[in-house]
Length: 78
Image (cartoon, rainbow, N blue to C red):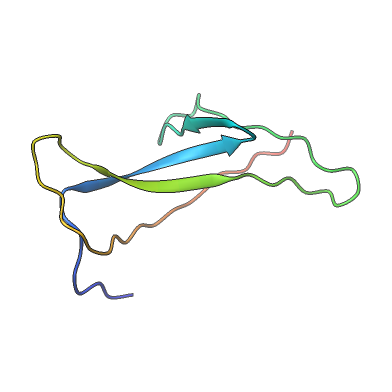
């Protein structure tokens, strides 16, 4: 995907939403773990994550535009 009008001065914040609890995900922190039990019938679990754009630096102007990200998740079954 090509982005012709990229945003500038922003970062992406990822949050885990579990019911009414919202917690910022700590990227590249192996101690920041989110667990769910697998559903007995479907053998699946559903996670709800939300990505938000935040200012990279408080005194830097953010400009509107597209942001391209690459995201990967590591899932460990225990």
